[in-house]
Length: 121
Image 1 (cartoon, rainbow, N blue to C red):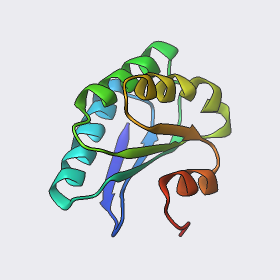
Image 2: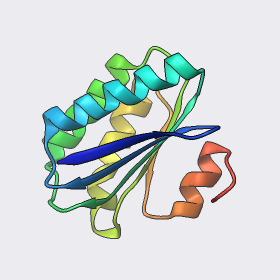
Image 3: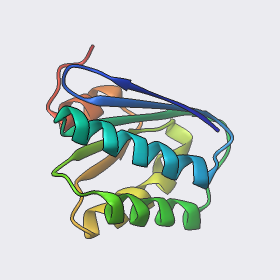
Image 4: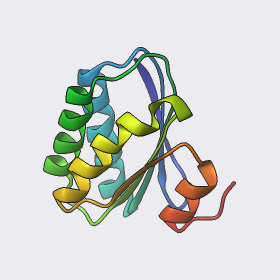
């Protein structure tokens, strides 16, 4: 799995591609959180539409739990995923939300931008 983290004026963008790797996903989360903290940003868009493999429900649950356990800032996080991954991605959303971190998973870019309170590019 590859990921690129970009600082934008009003959010952090994480773009992932390739075969899912839980260790790399956690590393991407850690780096995005560190950048938010360093720059005073409070929104993250994670674009996972190019993740090539199915991610197991267990991995999605673990990712949501990890995200929530590491989040020390008042952040809003949107996961943009392919249509094929939306149903399973809700495990990430539900796990993080149940632990107090506002997360949405969607296949709609406009829904992700709106939920983050940002204008679409």
